[in-house]
Amino acid sequence: IVQTEPANQVANRMLADLNLKGGQLKEAEDRLLRIVEASPALGLPLAKIQTALNRSPEQIEYHLENSTRYYSDLLSKDPSNVEVRIRCVEAQIFAGKLRDAEQVLKEGLAENDCDELRAELADLYVLMAQRELQLSILNRDRAAAYLVKAAHLAPTNSEITAQILMLASGGAVFSATDLEPSIAAQSAIASLPFENEMQLSQLLAIAGRSEEAIVRMDPLVESDIRFKVMKARHLIVLKKTEEAAVVLNQVIKEFAERAENLSISSVITYAEALTLLSLHEEATEILKAAIETRHSSDTKVGGENPNSAPKAEDLTLLQSAYGQCCLLAFNSRLKAGGFENPQDGIQLLEEALNTNSVSLLVLER
Image (cartoon, rainbow, N blue to C red; front, side):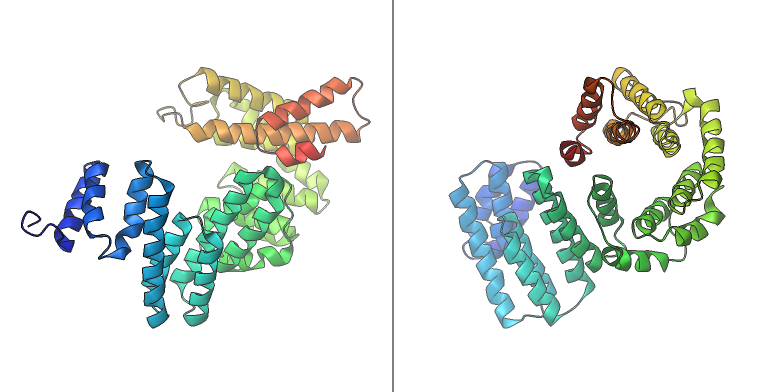
């Protein structure tokens, strides 16, 4: 067809798709260049291909602007068209025009408050939060504000909740009002998966609702040891320290009996239980040993799932827990009267800083 009709829209688009599937970027680019002027909607996929091919920024910007203009014209004629609005936003985001994309989505929600646009705007706020953190860890609180906006739009989104909890562990402050939509929406779900139940428990803790969290957790504590540690954390907040100590000592005893056979998750939970009893040095040693084992071995720490291939995120999780533990150890020693040798305190902070998990809190100290 293209031999007789070189500018045939359908045939060139189909051939471009086939080229992309075969990894033939240059051929796909050639196909789209033949038809993009007559079909500006193709400006976005073409810009993505040209970015991968390291074409000039001017070329890429030209096609993105044409694509955005095309979709904007369509929206002026039919503002309620959700699909067109989302395509317009995709082009703006790829061009780095996040504020313009935000405005287009807000206008769309004013026209048609639907789940698709809410999800798109939530995803955009998550992206804006990530960009802030990429620029500087000092932008933590600005990133947190974007995540609150995202959570209000998509309160059951577990990935957004996870990022909120990550920033909270790094020192970001969230109010009960910030978290209420997520807590309400997730609490209304009849049966939450384990990880989501853990997230909800942590949200309740941050919001100062530990008693409510314990009520939710009591039927679950025997199903997973991590619920026991989380319950103990809530008990400590409620100043029920003796009851918490009983729970934690049971947990520590159980972990100690199988210390040579723990998964990454269990090692982290073990260390958390120790820190809740202010046994910070023991916790840091356990995590440090696990990190060294992970560095030197091709197998997962322990044997709860010995046939699993090691995962890159395992080390990240361990280092994050280690960084937080070092910081807790520093705080504890400082509260107890400080360091006889100041270099010991500096070393703890350096260890924490090297994990990149609590950087801002370390710098504040």
